[in-house]
Structures are given as C-alpha cells and as structure tokens.
Length: 88
Image 1 (cartoon, rainbow, N blue to C red):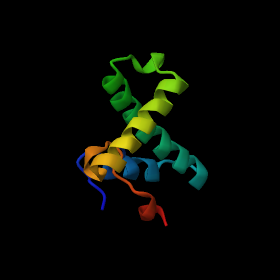
Image 2 (tube, rainbow, N blue to C red):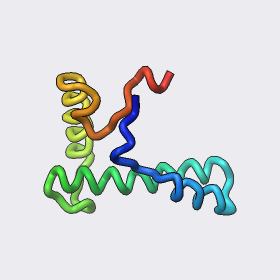
Image 3 (cartoon, one colour):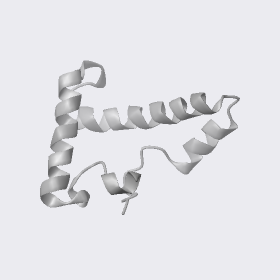
Image 4 (tube, rainbow, N blue to C red):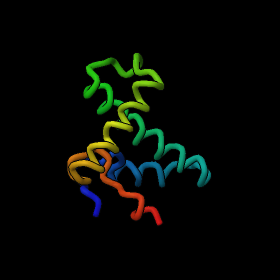
C-alpha cells in the first residue's frame, strides 16, 4: 500500500507534463526530474546539506538508511513508501 502523504509528483504536475509538446520518453524524463528534485530536497534536509553539495556517496547512504528503516520498522517509517511487490 502506498502512503500518499509525501508526493514527489502531484497529479497537477503530471498534467502539466502531459500538456507539453514532448515525446513519451521526454515526458517520462520530465516526470522523473521533477520528482527527483523533490526527493533531493528531502535528502538535503535530512542530511543538513545543501542540495548542490550532496555527493553520490551521501545519496546512496540515504537510500540505504531509508531501506533499512523500511525493513526494520515497516514501510510507514520510511520516506519512500513503495515496496518491491508493488512493482511486479
């Protein structure tokens, strides 16, 4: 089950992308970029680091910590609410 309390791409933002004169792959990348920008803001706040100072190591460690919270305390303890079975 997905928790929609923290959305990385709102329906309104998705609709704006849909209206753009872009190919399907470009629309996908636009949605990915919008949601990634929001996730990076969350990471930067969690790590008390400016977004432009985040490193690949910090981002990877953030994902590891979020996954650890999900495994140990359940999906609602993590920021990213998806589970692998949601993707099948």
